[in-house]
Amino acid sequence: MTTRDKYTIVVTSDRYGNERGGLEFEQELIDAVEDLDLTLSSRACISEDALISAAQGADALLVSTREAITRRVLENIPQVKVISRYGVGLDNVDLDAAADVGIVVTHYPGYCTSEVADHALAMILALNRRIVELDRSLRAGVWVQHGPATRTILGGPVQPLREQTLGIIGFGRIGQAVAARVTPFGVTILAADPYVDPETIRAVGAEPVSLEELLRRSDIVTIHCPLTPETRGLIDADALALMKPTAVLVNTARGPIVDLPALAQALQEGRLAGAALDVVDPEPLPAESPFYQMPNVILTPHSAYYSERSVDVVRRETLLEALQVLRGKRPRTVANPAVLEKVTLEP
Ligand code: NAI
Image 1 (tube, rainbow, N blue to C red):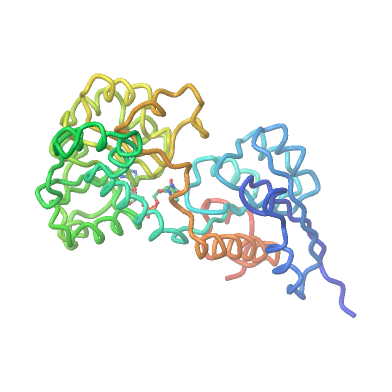
Image 2 (cartoon, rainbow, N blue to C red; image 1 turned 120 degrees about the horizontal axis):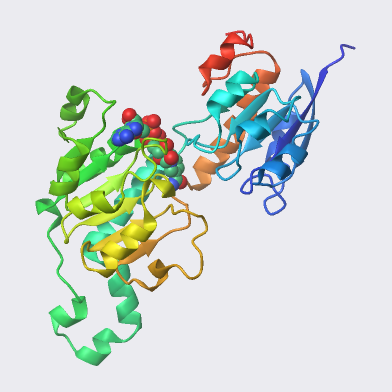
């Protein structure tokens, strides 16, 4: 009988494989692995100290969005060979530090492109048609109290979507999927993405513009860039001041891209007509946040990624990609390619 290499996998995610959801899904996949001797455990944690403690003795970490995978953490988890991120965004992982200490970081981009694009579209349509606002006011008795006086019942103007201009910030997978979804509505589409060739933008019927022009001209702005040092606070008070007072903002990317106090102020002062936020900073949004009181704001709990299918895909692929690295093989995506100078992975 051949001996199999022994490895320990620790799930630090607070979403999957934790005490709420159980590890059955991951365990079933592991049980089917014949070439490695694997032990799986879960310890949902976020803080640096808790992560360092959870990762002692671990060979692989499966992480979510909120764990602080900082340089300090990475320098204190010597046995870890791979960190596999459930999902797309890598803003919570110090990729350079991981490369410095020889830890491979992998993730699974694309698992929820259509889910997020659908979610953004739903928010765009809901804001434009005032669906959530009307539903709330109807339940509060507005129709009954005021009779069929359309203007009173509607509580505000509704612009025809076909005459609106949609600005997409970040024209990658999700941004392009949003463009494809809104095209049949006859909307004018602008896109701001300094890293995408303008011809790629034009090829799908959108107009490449600067961020400033996008903010000035758009009736609806939807954010689909990653959170990076460059995009942190991208939509700050100055950016919001460029937007039309009739415009609305949709964020399904990352909370810190938008300066939330500045957004709250713009909405309160009527300098912006509405917002839809799937992501905020911090998450969850504190109970005292003014957004809960604003009828023109739609909130969802960082759920744009979610569908029954996307969750199964990301749970399976996150684990399988980590196993590839433990086998000394290259996973589909190495998010910190500089690590390959330190670690040899077979193709
Ligand atoms: P992607 O990498 O395909 O596209 C991102 C685009 O943003 C790229 O084209 C890039 O050039 C562009 N970009 C980078 N810096 C920019 C800047 N300063 N200004 C404008 N554009 C810039 O990524 P994908 O798959 O489209 O995902 C986008 C983001 O969506 C992820 O980074 C993640 O943070 C977020 N996301 C949110 C989810 C949710 O549940 N709410 C789920 C999945 C992703």
